[in-house]
Image (tube, rainbow, N blue to C red; front, side, top):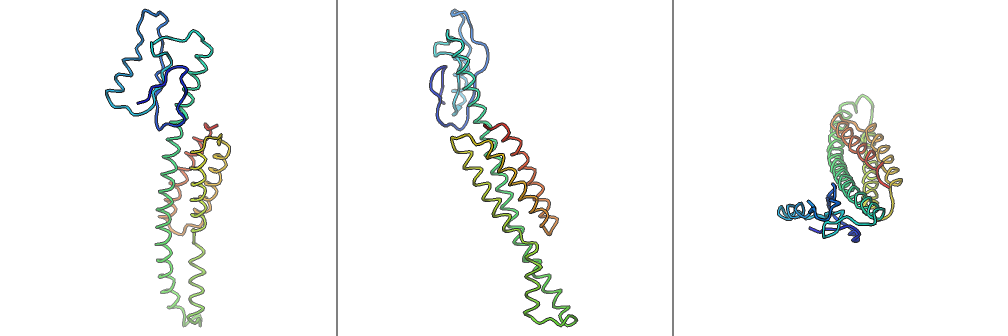
Length: 220
């Protein structure tokens, strides 16, 4: 556990944090409650950062405006870390959904190819098609439902999303743009999906993207 007291420098990166909000005694003879809270966190092996808006001696700073500036920045960083963690989880969920869609798409193509070959062979005599023409027609029909390009673009957008999230630069507008692109590709994916199973997975993917879109509105 790393404890950051008022006016101490903030850690550059951290994976989770707590901000010990609450009143600080103005009377120097009244002990602060925060040391006991820190002791409790240590006893449960908390392994994140703890922001403490008072000195190690449990006193409030006399420079009130500077103290408030530090508190606001500490809260902003704690909230930002929590948001980043939620966004990272959302990206992971979306990536897992894409992998399922990829597997389902490949399996669906094989099934459609087999069914079309069987059906067209039954009609070969009636239509006068040779094997070459038969193969071309099967390929054309199967490719109409191919979503591999959409899946590839979605994966690329998610990679960019993760890279922006891990950067130290303001990325709110770019993340918002990427969620729009993700939703556009997901809509195209849904319109080309040839099976109810794929459509259901696309609906679930769009729900995850929409949640990401809502969350990035809070990113600077």
